[in-house]
Image (cartoon, rainbow, N blue to C red; front, side, top):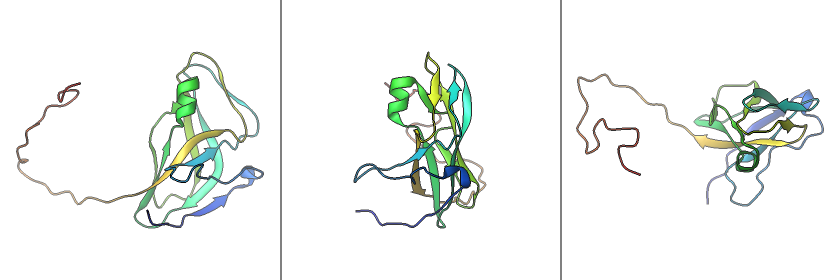
Length: 150
C-alpha cells in the first residue's frame, strides 16, 4: 500500500459547479481532469486546443504532476494529450490546462465537465550532472531506435 501525500488544490472561478478531480477506482493511478470551458469547443481532425480545467495545485516538495491521456478518448475518438505526459513542476502555481489534439477522422466536441485527461502525482529526483571524458561500456552500447528487437 502506498503512502498518502497531500496536494493543495485551488478551484478557480470558472471551475464552479464542476467536481474536483477524483480517482474512479480503488487502485487508480490518475485523477480525472474535467474541461472547465464556457461552451463547446469543436476540434476538427488534426486540430489542437488548450483546454482549461479551472484548477491550480500546490505539490509537496519532491513531486510532480503528469497530465496523461484518457484511454477511452484515444481508442474511441483518436483524441489524446499532445505533449504527453505533460509535466507540472512542483513550483508551478498557475492553472492546469490540457493540450488536446484530435488525431481522429471526425470533429470531436469538448463540452463543459467532460473528463479530458488524467493527473498522476509522482515523485521526482533531480540529478547532479558530472562532466566526464567517456562513458562506461554496456552490452547495448549506442544502439537505439528498435535495435533491441521486436
